[in-house]
Image 1 (tube, rainbow, N blue to C red):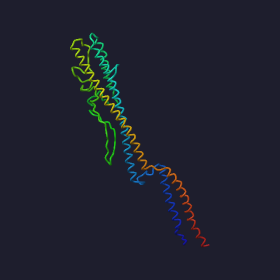
Image 2: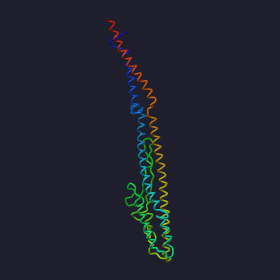
Image 3: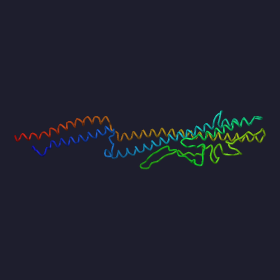
Image 4: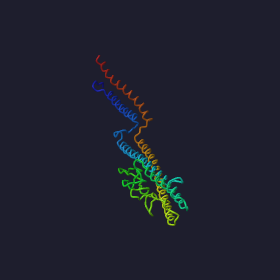
Length: 301
């Protein structure tokens, strides 16, 4: 039946064209954004998972930044500690050799003390300069915290986040403190490494015993400072390992997000070409269907 009011062919062609246009718009959005799930309406479950994983990745990025800051701080303190241990030209190692030399009978200990004083001042200056971003663990004050937590990791199980950290006890590395309880300023036997003075000592047995005490004190300080440096060296390695792991984990999370929401551009380009052809054919089909009503006019001629 030919009807002037109801053109079922045109209706079918219009519905098909609307469907093709809607699919074409979706495909164009995927191509422009690079994602097949860019909003919650595309796929609520995948969008929710991807959003949470992006938040986790942002937290991991902050951990990576924190590890970088921690690595710089630890490296600064480690460098200063190794400088204080010194070698044959300075530091505790040179100080020890000078004190052993001072046991020589008849030697001018006043001149040796001049060298000792310079080494003491150099070690104190090194400790004071071991500051990064306002942090100094070698020369501490009452405002310096007793422990330090270096953020090292982040994880989330369900809705429960967990932040891992490397805990350090500052007193392990303190060479000088405001309460003179550091490795180099703790007084025992009447002097600390920082206040050793041999200028008035003689060849007398009691003075030679005092020199032995000073040598033992410096030897103990070398062992303590070397142990502290070794501890920081281990922390440096741990930070480096954690940094590499966090970066790898961020890449893994990015890949996981991509598998959930990224569009397959090969597939989308093929679909785009097909839909564009379908749209053109749909327009032609609708045009033909609309023109069919013109044939009714011939019935009244």
